Length: 391
Image (cartoon, rainbow, N blue to C red):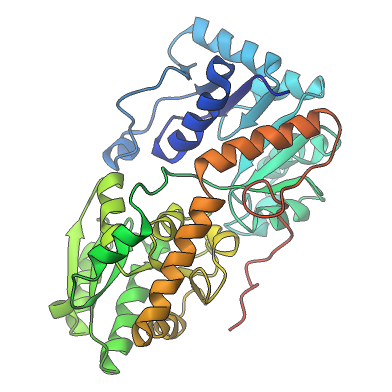
């Protein structure tokens, strides 16, 4: 029986809170989140800061006593989850063969060349390759994590679990959300994120020009800010889309969720540097017909093309326009997809289910029993490469 879980990560933020709240609800004082460094100022400005710190958070960076307590938990807990945090915390734990999960986005998303950089190669060997025989498993925050680790000399072979980041689940029912959307005359397409190159917001603008040329009626809203903002506004002007496009500016995470509830279609256009893509999760949870890039880590885990959302070929405005057109020309099917997405997230991909499954699987692993769930979090993460998608 699992009585204690400690989760190490760099800092506590809204991406982790919902899952941590559920682990705390299940384990009470047996759960602890160890924050190992202060949050960067730019993350705080983005709305990542959590003002009401819950009682299960231990800030190990604030005092020697807190750090000593973190080391004690690292060794004594039944289960340790290791996010972005110093390896020193789990070094002794691994020597004693105690169950540990590494919570990881893909390590080679910038390219396989990283394995040939001497200091990175040493880090990969020490952290992953040398521990292949240990009770060290991987919570894969993305569908391409397992294939990256396979390239690292079969690290985590048959030890990779589907996982991700779990924002708070939707409060409103899908019927309430759909009824509110019915009050609008025009379909709303939504994009949210930072206006930086890897997010590729230009793709949705270019795709919308293709759709407008075909006579489709819709509104486009882009929420966010960043270095590419002026370029994107100029692109809208040059493509004569300004009359149907709104740049809303920065919004807090909770405000963004409200925008998703209003939108009919949510679009994620990022390139392969998007390790996970929490906005995909949030769009699906809000019952949007979500159209997502093929190379975001969340896409293959969460979207069944044409059933719970749509997938488009990364970098292609034509592919994106085609999938958006499928929504625009069949509004009832668009709604069906939104409903199916909502049900999937409510039934499987939610923080309560993820926490319960993590505890259940851990109980089997401690007893030496292999265990994978059938679908959703803690099911087996197979080998998938970023060129998987075929139209």
